[in-house]
Image (cartoon, rainbow over all chains, first blue to last red; front, side, top):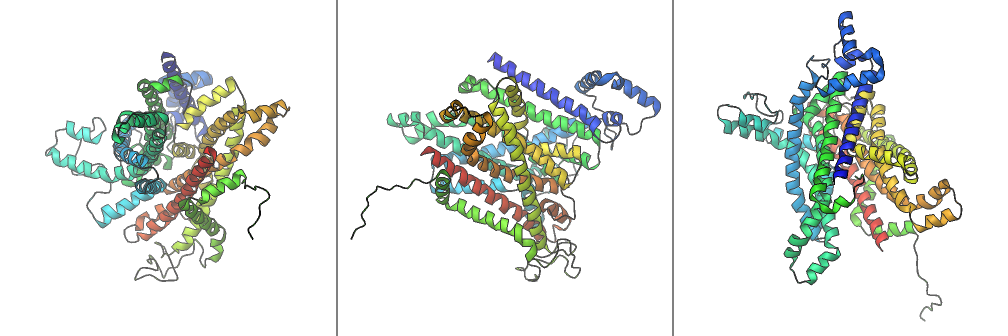
Amino acid sequence: MLIYLGRRLNLLLITLLILCIASYILAFLFPGDPLTNLSGTPSPSDDQAQQLRLMYALDEGALAGFWQYLKLTLVGEWGLSLSSQNPIFDDICQFLPASIELSLYAMFVSLLVGIPLGIIAGLNHRRISDMGILSVSLVGFSLPVFWLALLLILIFALQWGGLPMSGRVSLLYDIPHQTGFILLDIIMSNVANKQQVLLDALNHLILPTLSLSIVTSSLVIRLTRRSVINVMASDYIKAAFAKGLSRPQVFWRHGMKNALLPIMPQLAMQFTVLLTNAMIVEVIFSWPGIGEWLIQAIYQRDFPAIRGGMLAVSALVVIVTISVDLLIRMIYPLSKKQIHAQV
Amino acid sequence: MPKSSFYNEELYPSPMRHTWNEFQRNHIALAGLWCLGFFVLLVLLGPWLLPFGPLDQNTEAILLPPAWDANGDVSHLFGTDGIGRDLLTRVVHGCQITFGASLFLVLLAMLIGCSIGAYAGMSRGLRASIINHLLDAIMAIPTLLIAIIIVAILGTGLMNSMWAITLALIPQFIHHTRDMVRREYKKEYVTAARLDGASELRIFFHSILPNMIEMLVVQATMALSVAILDISALGFLSLGAQSPSPELGAMLSDALETAYVAPWSISLPGAAIFLMVLSINLVGDGLRTALKNRLSQ
């Protein structure tokens, strides 16, 4: 296990290092002055340029330059955004939690819906209920997330008018930024009539979460169904039936755990898919998250921000994947045998 | 007189035939195949059948509802958009761009991915290990995210977004080809071929490739649906195809301003994407089940 832990941590560090190298190289590949791309100072005066060259160690060769860049990245000096002149690291710290929050809720909803439906479909393999659930999940899986979001807006926000279509909370309320997670922020703040504000924030959450979780829950259904079918066809289930256990007993005692544990990594992997979809959905719902911010940066050719945003998002995805993988290894004994890298 | 049978003839279908027979038993998948065939025909023939061009503006019929609406006109079957362009024409041209570009880039990604994957599968030692570990890290990142990052570097545009998605799809193909090659490489028929003195290249092309071509087709259909979704998502975010182009995603983002008065200009192009992806997924699912049934017999 320790060896495995070491290997995974090694992989994590190497991947993060590669990401850092890539982002450093990007500063030179992007059009324009590398110094501007690194620091975000639009057109530095001679003095400033000299200072910045010293700060980024640009004259001391590529390796020393990268080392300096790495140190600056680790302490949170990610340069300034070209368009707003805010420190990029602060911006990311402000916007990233909003995306994570949205993805977490969507993940929660899709697991809550997807796993039971997948189990029902798997237990009734090749019956009407299985076919029904499978076709619904196939439809959900084929829906383009941006179209789904637009349809939901058309139906629920424009035609029916019951749900808000943009933002995180009504503009009437001023919620101070603390953690970046809107619900936590509301609970921690001392706004008047907190209940109402919470209800408003939840109302704002419904449509984005729904459009994200429809796609993901259909993926979850498919994964769960396949796994349940495989497990129910295995020999130890037959043995359990032969012992005279009833169907629910067999499933709860022998089937459930064995069906769900192996697909945990794949289920957790859906989080990264969700995060990407969340980036699109944020643009549609004007949700102030990292996706909206990054895509604005791409429009404005704001290279320091693109570099920082790319580094933050991909680092988050890699960290989530590897730590989930580690967690699963710890609680699922069978997978401990395969210590070599796998996906 | 009963037919005499001298020979106890049994029909042994070829593997491809067998898969096709299995596939035909799944009616929903067959329907998907018909739907996909319809889209292919539409992409090939559609633009010649239509009286309008994708950028032609009819200023007398702005925001005309579809023909089935009470205010619709049959000369514009799907209605028109905010500056009087015929929606049916644009959807057909959009299918051509979105579907054609996706097909092209999936083929390209498959070609590159399979060559690297075959190389990685047949090589041993440090090289293979490095490829494996790098791949595992890259595979974890969703393709759309990689594509967005690459577009951020290359700049926006349909060509750039196609390159970006191609690059983002390659790791999946490498991964699957590598696994498959490695699995097949241990089997006895490959050992037999090796004992006969066949070179690595010959083993790959004559022994391993015929056995994995069907899995590759399944993989390609999955990649195709991902590619269509991604290319239209990039178009929608104005990172891919740019505004006047009738790419389906770009059309959707064009129609945002008139969404309230002309909901059909959002629902119809989106439905085209949805149907395309659905039919591809149906075919891919059906093929995969057919293959599994064949191999388990």
